[in-house]
Every structure is written in structure tokens, then in C-alpha cells.
Image 1 (cartoon, helix red, strand yellow):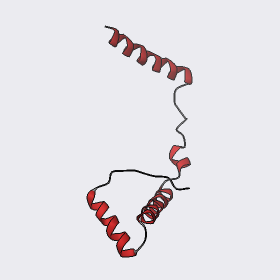
Image 2 (image 1 turned 135 degrees about the horizontal axis):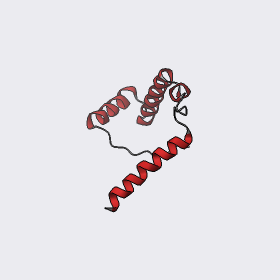
Image 3 (image 1 turned 180 degrees about the horizontal axis):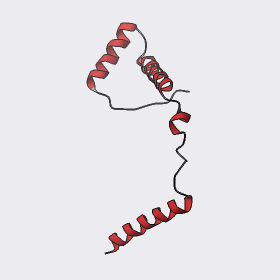
Image 4 (image 1 turned 90 degrees about the vertical axis):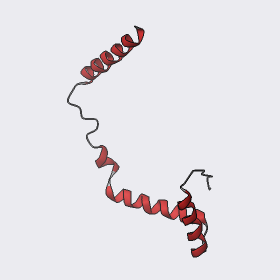
Length: 83
């Protein structure tokens, strides 16, 4: 099932899209879909999401230390706004 997508693009890009569709005699929809697929493929080869996030959960501080630090920052901010 197709989904309607609305976005603002640069006028030069819109003209390029029109020219490509006319020159290649294919729908603009196909040009946009193919371009997004190609762009996605290049990103997939550059960075694996697992490798990019590996170790994100590893912290030098314990959960209790993190909670205490976050709570202190929150309380300080609340105190600043009360006065």
C-alpha cells in the first residue's frame, strides 16, 4: 500500500525531479523511491546499527550513582526556578 508523503524541497530539486521524470519517462514516485533506496543502501554499508550503539549501555558509574547525579541536577534546576 502506498502512503502519501508531503515535504518541502528546494525549487531546483523540484525542477531536477521534473526533468528526470520527463527524460527517463518514468513517474516521479519511482525516482524518489529509487533515490531513497540507493541512499539507504550506502548508509547500511557505512554503519551497522549494532556496531554504532555497541557499548552505549556500558557506564563507568553504577546505576545508583547515575540516579543520584541526575536527581541532584534536577533538584538544583527546580531550586533555581523556585527562587
